[in-house]
Length: 342
Image (cartoon, rainbow, N blue to C red):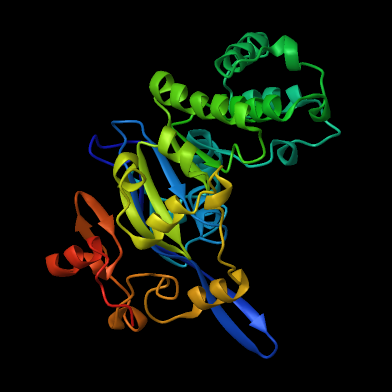
């Protein structure tokens, strides 16, 4: 496959995924992802973190990047090719070799009836990464990149491994094809705190030493800030703020991102949450409202937020989907907490 030097590794342009949900005799359109745009350049490997609450569209976006879902609208392009235009042969022999997944539950990715090394040998064989004689040495070299050896896992079943070991094997399986992009969907959410950082550090090492870009999908702001070079914050299918991790998570501009940051539970009992929220009501309202999806929870809501969808404004070098950044006067009022709530 040819590639021009200025062609992005991945370009997601106004991508939308619509599901149709039947309710009795009627059908409702549900926009799981709504006009999302992300670009990852090919010449500089990045960890691009996508963060948001459950139901924000993170996993649906990941499934579209992996070719597991087809966008309803918009363009999803890998290198110089539109994914929807790839043949099955191109998907299997080229795309799936260069773009590899790592899922949330490593045990769900492996059959309990098959030895764990079966998947490693199978991947080597399917993509012709090494000869039969060289397979052991090649697999061992890849496992060592994730802190394991073939001797440690050969002949063992998934249930004989710890969660951390199983996730490392899953990452090693993805690395066997020498991918350019790894899509990791909540890869540390099922691990304890000590193992989370080891896996996150592994992604950083792979970026630096193997020149692999990573889409890191998570609800964990701490690991997103630590690992991510760039961050996109999703809310009910929208990307509401996008920029570097220092910008977006260090000094958030969108009211939703600010809320996410301040909603991390404190170890101080006096700072515990006091407000009770009916999440079912909140979620239904945010999916169906006609204006800004965050208007029902936003402390800075204005009249136009109820009826108009905010465009993406560029402020301080990042994209923010919020009317607060439409003009300098409103921004100044928001900074002082003086925007009139209606």
